[in-house]
Length: 474
Image 1 (cartoon, rainbow, N blue to C red):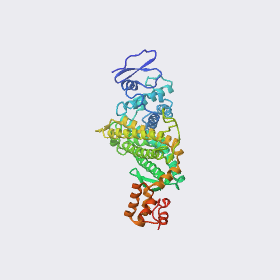
Image 2: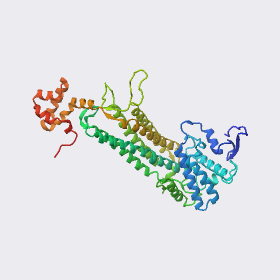
Image 3: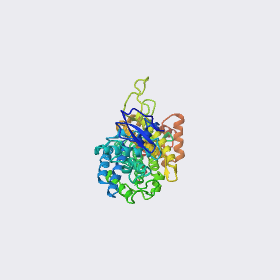
Image 4: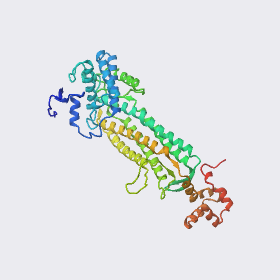
C-alpha cells in the first residue's frame, strides 16, 4: 500500500519498484526506507537500531565501495563519493536517518536499503546534485553493487556484535574481575563460616569466597572470547543465496580484508556462504555465552545481598554502599539495589537468549529470516550486561567492606566447627557433640566436655577455625 500523499511543499517524491513515495524534504533516506518506516510501527520506541549497527552498516558500505573500485566494478569518482558519505555514517553524523526497527523484513532488507539510500543521497549532496535524483549515485546500482541484503545484513550482524563484545562488555568484565581479585586479596585473612544448602558448613576466608566470584567472571570472559571467534567469518560475497551471483569471485575476500583493516578485528570471508546466510549459529553461541555470564552474575549478586542482609535480622556479614533510601514508609531503610538491578538484567538476558535460540533454529532453505530480532536481542543483552556490570562494580563491589564483628560471632557460634574433630575422635563421636550442642542450645566446647570425648586443652588445640581453611599439612 502506498503511503498517503502529503503536501508537496515539505516533501519530495521518490520512486521505487512499487511506485511513487513522498519523503520529508529534510531526510536523506529514500522510498524503501519511508515505506518501511510507515509499514512497521511495531516496537518503535524500543527496537530502533543504535550506534553499533549504524557504524557497522557504514563500515560495510565503505569497504564494499573500495573493493568494487579495486576490482574495477565502480568508477573512482563514484567510489570516492560513496566512501566519503559512508565515513560520515561511521562516525555518527547521520544516526537520525536510521529510523527503522528490528520488526521488519527478517532478512534486514529494509535496513540495507536504508543505508544504501542515505549514503546515495548524501553522496549526491556532496557532488552538488539533487537529493532523490539517484544521480550520480544510485542506491542499488552503486552503493549496493555486488551485494544482496542476504549477505550484507549478516555481515553487519557479525561486525556490530564483535565490536560491542570486544570493545565494551569484555572490557567492563575485566574491570569487575580485577576489582573482585583486589577484594579477595584484601580480605584473605578474614575467616568466616561457610554455608552449603543454606546451612552452616566449615570455615573459609572471605577472600576465598570472593575469589570464587572472580573466577566465575573470568570463566565467563573465556566463554565470550571463544564465541567471539565465530563472528570473524563474514557472509559478504554470498549475495542472494550463497552462490555469489553478480559479484566478482574476489569480492568477499577483498571486503573482509578491508573490514579487518577498518576495525582492527581479524575478520575473514566465510568459507561456506550457504551456512553464513541460512544459519546464525555463531550468534546463537554468543547469546549462550551471554546467558552463562548472566547466570554467574545472578549468583554473585545474590550472594552479595544475602551476605549483606539485615542489618539486624539478617546475616549482615558484608556492608555495601548506601546509595539511596530504600523505603517510602520505613525511615532509614537501605536496600541492595545494585544487586537487584543486576539480577533483573540477568533475567532479561535469559529471555533474550530464549528468543535468539528459537530464532536461530528457524532458517528455511537458503535464508534465516529472523536476522533482525537475533541481532537486536544479542546487542540488547551485551549492552544491558555492560551497563549492569559497570554499575555493580562502581556502586557496589568497590564499596564492599566486611562486618568483622558479625562474621566472628557467626563463626564462633557455628556447630560445623566440630568437623575439625573428625580426624581426632571419628565422625560419629563428633556428630554426638554437634547434636548435643544443637538440641541443648549450648556451645560445642561445652558439649564436648559434657560428653567427655575430649579435654578442654584438646578442644582448644584441635578446633581452630584459622586451621580449617586449607587441606591438611604434610
